[in-house]
Image (cartoon, rainbow, N blue to C red):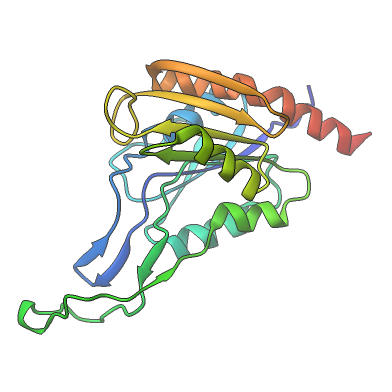
Length: 223
């Protein structure tokens, strides 16, 4: 293995999109899966940059954390860190939309319009995939139904190397849970189901699965 550590860039947690200084829209992502992957990658000797939305977690030892709130802030951080990385693992639950207008002061209840216009946020994973040179690209697809077909669509649409699909809620783990059950799909048709286990165990299995491809990709650049 190359003496230079594998450089890994991970996004984790939710993003927030503000309506006014005290109100925002977000999602229930806890960041646990992304932080577990960061810990597993660091334990494997990788150099890890972790761009995290607002979560109540402490970054693992040897991991450099970049805290952000909004999707734009997450995009800017990823944009600055992406080029030198060997692998990008996008676990963050980035809000797809934000209010078109952000009020500069708290909107009083009697002033509020119950209709809010939204606009799309930057698709960070798709944007980085278009710009990649040799980076291994890994996305996550959290679904409520048709998980495998939706995850496969994301894999193909965003030109990824792997996508990790999981169902939200029930007995499958997901947002906020300490366990997860996932299906890893590869661009060459690979299919790796991972039964319900702790997120730490899932993270270690993912790093073990991904490392050979990263090493192969780096070797091909040096040959």
